[in-house]
Every structure is written in structure tokens, then in C-alpha cells.
Length: 109
Image 1 (cartoon, rainbow, N blue to C red):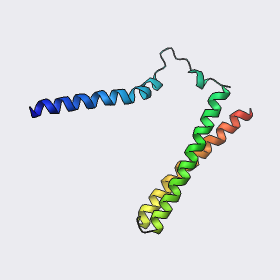
Image 2 (tube, rainbow, N blue to C red):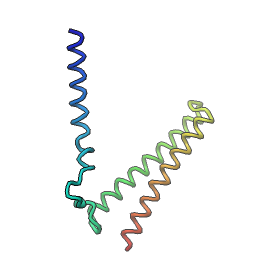
Image 3 (cartoon, rainbow, N blue to C red):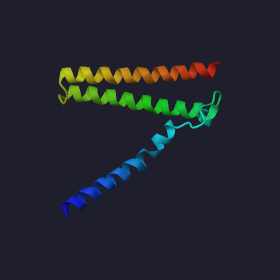
Image 4 (cartoon, one colour):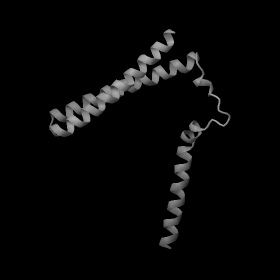
């Protein structure tokens, strides 16, 4: 009986993973090699959506940096942990800012 429960649990987990990952897997597929509509150059709606997503990501990253600083000041993070976390968060923030700048440059063309 225990083996049957384990097998059913694993089967249910596999189905859940497939359902949740379906949109991610579909995004990687380009059967005819053509760009999706939002990826076509000059698509202003896609650019506006990309910009909004990047701005939201930027604000979220800034919030994470502030939270890490607060955790360090309150003693929840050691100096070494804070340095590693802060460096990684700031690198991610710079990457987001670079992507925003590239989007602005593409729009200016």
C-alpha cells in the first residue's frame, strides 16, 4: 500500500511539473524558425511591455538591496554574507539597468 501511495505521489508531482512548465517549454519552441510576434523589430507594444517588466524588476531589485542592507544593520547577516549578497544583487541591478538602456537606445533608432 505504501508503494502505491509513493508511486501515485510521484505521478501527481510529474503531472504538476509538466503543467507548470508548459508555458516555459513552449517559449523555447520555434518550429519554423520565425520570430514570435512580440519579438519582431519595431513592435511598440512588445517594447512597452518589456520596458514595464524591466522597470518592475529594477524596483524589485532595489527593494532586495535595501532589505539586505537592513538585514546586515540588524545583525541578521554577517559582514561576509552581506558582501556576497550585496555584490550579487548589485550586479543583477546593473544588468537590468543595462537592458533598460539598450531598450531605450533601440527605441531611439
